[in-house]
Amino acid sequence: MRILHTVLILILLPACSAPATQRTPIAQATATSQPTATIPATQAPVPTATIAPTLVATTPRPALDADPLILWAVGPESQREALTKLLQQTASTAGIPVQIVAKSPNALATDITAGSLLGPPPDMIWGGADDLFLLKQAGIIQPANDRLDDRRFLPATIEGATADGQRWGTPVAARGVLLLLYNRKLIDSAPRTTDDLLLQARRLNGGNQVGLVAAWIEMRWLEPWLRGFGSTSITSDGSPQLDTPAMVSALGLLKQLRTTGAPPPTTYAEGARLFRNGKAAFAIDGDWALQEYRSYSETLDLGYAALPTISANGRSALAPIDGVYLMYSTTLNGTRLAQGQQLGTALTQPLIQEQIASELGYLPALREALRSQTITNNPALMAAATNALAAPGIPPQAGLRCAWAAGEQVLPQLLLGELNAEQAATRLQSWAKACATP
Image (tube, rainbow, N blue to C red; front, top):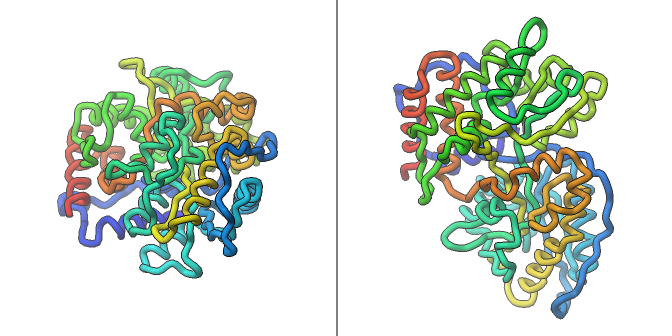
């Protein structure tokens, strides 16, 4: 699962390494969680209903080409059948001939890194924010001039596709949301503030049980606290900004929360196993992990909540959301480009957006679809939708990837007491800046 993360770093940092002062051995094992700055989304929530695709033709259909458009569907193997069926049905209803080729995120990244795309080149690609980043960096996709109004979509999905003043994909879904999960056999209701979370997690931490598990050394898990304290990992121009008072506060909160978990060194995988087996009261984890958690009903009565607000200021802890997009190859033009854009528009229709939520377990990209019964009847999607309109995206910027990659280099030293919060913030910035400097 860490292949895509490694590929990203290899692309960004062919000559970048951490400063010598940062070579302290990491006693805490590296987390094997969802990779920092990547969201391959190995699993999705269990669908609650199926809604047949219905399209309203608002524009004349272009004449069909004899050859189908080749569409690469990049996603986890567990969703391959459902995703392929959804795309085929939507294209068929819109009168657009397509040939769908399933791809894993790691396979796509490996092909791009090797400088070759195996098989016939795609006309379109369905994929996430990191796929978009890689494809744009490689010059494989063109701006998505689909004439859709950005204001109709979740801001995170627009942010995740926008660079150089242009949007590089049609937003079709949102995923990768971090949630506060809890075991209802141990907890009656989810805490609403960080102080309440600390109080309950400390109370339930002892014996053969722990309070809270998370990917402690992953910057993706730190970002919501940083946002809650009023800052971000990058500036408006995409440069890392990690040595800020807000980062010091976020690191302080992280250290407090860490004391309610299993003694270090503990990996993400070990923490997730404790939660699955009923030995942890809370877990901060992504929507990609829900399917596996749900299979442990004997030990885990799963509850879902948005991340708690920051007690110090009442602000929401905003976890980044990964957009999912239909992207268009630079080789696509004329009538075939019009067909591709028509398919993108079809995928943004409200009923198709509900079908994406129902069958793939993703949040809709379309704002109005957040109010559908598909969302309100699904506790996990409802929790994910709580802050969806305010949540940040994952923009296609190297600076963010560098900022997030710094976490695995520095956070273990903070959590093991080798650095204080101020020192860790300074070292995070130093590492990320060296990474991001051409």
